[in-house]
Amino acid sequence: MTRNKLARTNEQGNAVSLGDQMKNNTQLQGLGFEIFGEQEFVRYPVIGVNQPTSDYKPEGKFHNRVTGDVYDAVDVVFLGLRRSMTFRPNGYNDPVPACFSNDALRPDPTVEQPVHNVCHRMGPRGLIAECPNARWNRTGDGKARRACDLRYTAAVDMDGKQFLMYFQGRSIAPLERFLSQVRQFRQPLFGVRATLNLIYRTKKEGFMGNFYEINFPDMSNPSERERIEVVNALDYQELAQFFKDYFDSAPSDLYHEGEGEHEKSVTQANPRDGVRYADATEQNESSIDDRWGSADF
Image 1 (tube, one colour):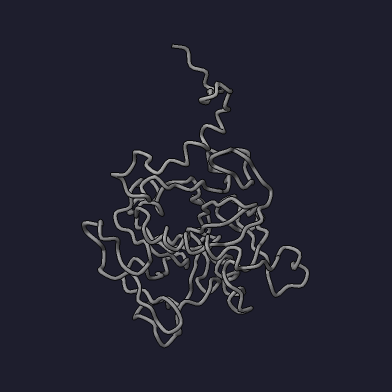
Image 2: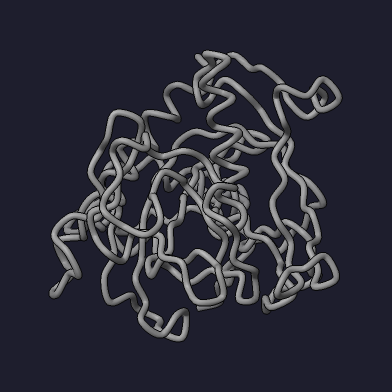
């Protein structure tokens, strides 16, 4: 029997396009996947950054990992955020982390041998490291490092479609500064649309490699106001609630899938260049205080 993949016929014998047939199929109540959890199949497309070390080209662009579309800049509304940490003894040569946390507070229950039973505790002004791998330590070269990598997973709306974006390394501090400003202006997370672009960092500037850093608008700078738009947060409230539930129920490996985003050759920075996590009086006993949200790796 010959099958026409581009068209079907309905009961009246009229041709039905593939798109229309797919739309009709979605009206069915039972889809045949009932033995699975809903989140086992939900994987949102990712907007990534094509780094010089990435397999994706052209470099220096935001990149839709599904369609292949590239952008010099993206206009996004942040719908939800998830903070996670991973410990890879051999760096990103380890495809699976030896220990990880989906909330940066406690190791995931699936970790067989966690380094510590608590990653961070909540202090009056933010996270305070309990696990030695979550603390900043100064090395012999004067750089600040921690064994665990911090990552933010963000759900964003772009032109009415939803994507995931990953923020780690040098992109964390700008993200946290932006979030702090949104909070200070008493706006909901999903009440602001921001234009993100990329800044090229090079060895000539003193960095250990060449890479692209995500650049957020500074809401306090009048010259950057055109990169910020206040939107009606009520229009995004339902989506924001959906992604809150999604992050709570999605499989734990969601936040540790390799997306080629890791900056392999980036300088270490003073942790004070990041964003405050906790007050000085709340510090653990360590040669370096852990008040700051991001040092570069």
